[in-house]
Amino acid sequence: MESLDLEPGYSTGEIPGKCIKCLAEQELNACLRMLLVGEGEDNEVQQEYEMLLSFLRSPESKRLRDESERLLSEGKQVALRMNTDRDTGEVTYKLSVV
Image 1 (cartoon, rainbow, N blue to C red):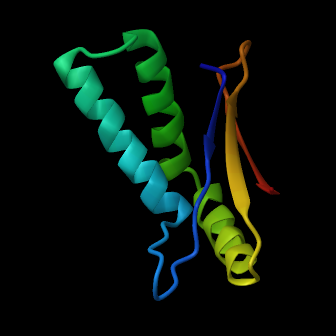
Image 2: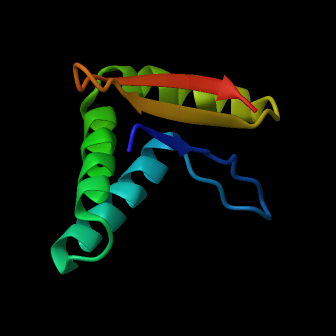
């Protein structure tokens, strides 16, 4: 797995949304469950788990969360793309308006 996308949603009275951090934590827990029971492609699930954990531990996560919340409050749809560099294994993050 080289990239992973998270698309947060803005909460309204009728529609519950989730911030980037909540989505990342939800996906992290799902990966952990899959790894514990041995479901799916272990290598791919392990890579996704590591990307999500890296994001949650990153100092950038707070800035990206704040920026996505601002854009969502303006009525825009946003997506966070996480990429892993094949050579260095470094994870990068890019927030974009979709």
